[in-house]
Image 1 (tube, chains in turn cyan, brown):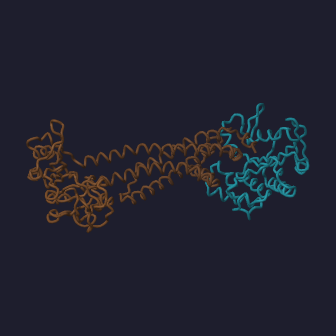
Image 2 (image 1 turned 30 degrees about the horizontal axis):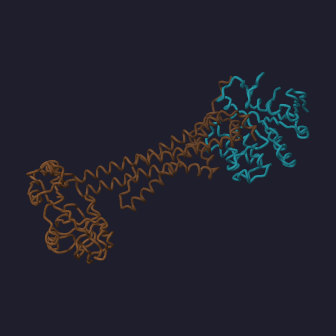
Amino acid sequence: MVVEEGELLCVVGPSGSGKSTLLHIMGTLERPSRGSVQVAGHDVSALPDRELAALRSRHVGFVFQQFFLLEGASAVENVAQGLLYSGVPARARRGRAEEQLRRVGLGHRLTHRSAQLSGGERQRVAIARALVGRPSIVFADEPTGNLDSQSGWQIVGLLRELNRDGTTIVVITHDLELAAALPRRVHIRDGQIEIDERE
Amino acid sequence: MSSTLARGRLSAADVLRVGASGLATRRLRAGLSGLGVAIGIASMVAVLGVSESSKADLLAALDRLGTNLLEVGPGQTFAGESAELPEEAPSMVRHMGSVGEASATKQLSETVRRTDRIDEAETGGIAVIAADPGLARTLGARVKRGEFLDAATADYPTVVLGHDAARTLGISRPGVNVWLGERWFSVVGILAPVTLDSDLDNSALIGFAVAERLFDADRSPSTINVRAADDQVEETRELLAATANPEHPEEVEVSRPSDALEAEAAAKSAFTALFLGLGAVALVVGGVGIANVMVISVLERRSEIGLRRALGATRRHIAAQFLTESLLLALLGGASGAALGAAVTAGYALSQGWPAVVPAPALAGAFGAALAIGALAGLYPAARAARLSPTEALRSV
């Protein structure tokens, strides 16, 4: 399976089909027991922990179902965490975080703590955090799973918009309705790719 | 191809920032676990500070009172009975070239009571002593109220009370009478505590002349306090026995009261070790508290660990974060503990009228101990956090 630069695709499958494992392997969080993974030209299986971490900090972004925001921190601080491990100086991190938050439509929520934000806003903060390092690829694991359907569709809209601006995005979901809204769908079941359809 | 990957670097400031923010979001918990270390450090600093302050006070007193005082007293005869000094001993001693001044005292067998109505047995342990008028000056004793005995009052039934004796008798100012040896004596003065001869604190001092006349006492002294020239103290000490009692110099005992005070100062340091040990136990308990909080923190923050790994943190970054948190906790506790210990020392020294001394090595030691405790307490939790695989950490919620 190959994801081209600038693509927006989703991996669809029922729970237990292995889609989260696929995400972890593609995102270099886990090493494959067989086969190989290449991200931005780097063969993942050959890299030690430190270089793998560097690869993640520069080339891979993650969006999780549970957002995983730092509770006590403001929206800007949360987004700035996305640059913490790639060696960007503190002042520049803040500026880029603010810029990224404006891009996802949260320019008016910069100093709000995550507890003061709605679910949809929290996921936008998480998306801004994933994108602030300008990664080669972003993995979104059930990004709408914890949201009501209206906020969910807004998030999907945002992902499409970001993709139009050039970001490569892989969405993992069990939601067929969501999947139908995306241009490429990879269906998996029991760890095997069943169908790889494009429009 | 993969060699082009630059490794992620985290500056020291970033490590500090991440560690500090971890504490800032859990203030109550951080405060409570830091408190354990603070109590341990505070008690150690206070123990060292108080003992140093009291020692400084003692040494300052010695400085003020001088270390050239020698005390001459009767020893034992060859047969093992208590000896006596000859009556002319004080004047013999006074004629030594290296002796500045000398004052004699004699223990009498009389008792002193507040009035004649009080039972004879209730003496309060107050000794009645005949003393030379020069005694106060020789000992560097301060008269708190009234006057010491002088050539005139020493001939009359007048008495000077030691600090504790006055309190026992319930007398706070001169001018009243006390019942001394079946007679009324007028109190002319009350002494402040006498550092160089604390026996005087619980005694009543009368003149030799009046003791001779009223109580039939002889003039054989029970002690002679001698001020020697500062540079000839040891020489004087060796000659004193033969001068005071030329016939039986072996029946004379000579001592140097400042030696006892110096020994007391040293003994206080030894006693301090015990309390210091207790402080160290408190510190260790505080360290265990931090380790406990850090272990719980690692369990609770698995998702944060997973997230940071996903954002590109290496195992080292994660370990550094938790180790920094633990070090900061211990340092905060150590700093507030040192401040608290210094404040306790200052307060206690003030209440005792001592100079407040917080020894610099104690403060440096406090910070060193806090750092060591923080490092030890943080090591295991940090290693545990770093060992966690990213997917395991992310799955936990």
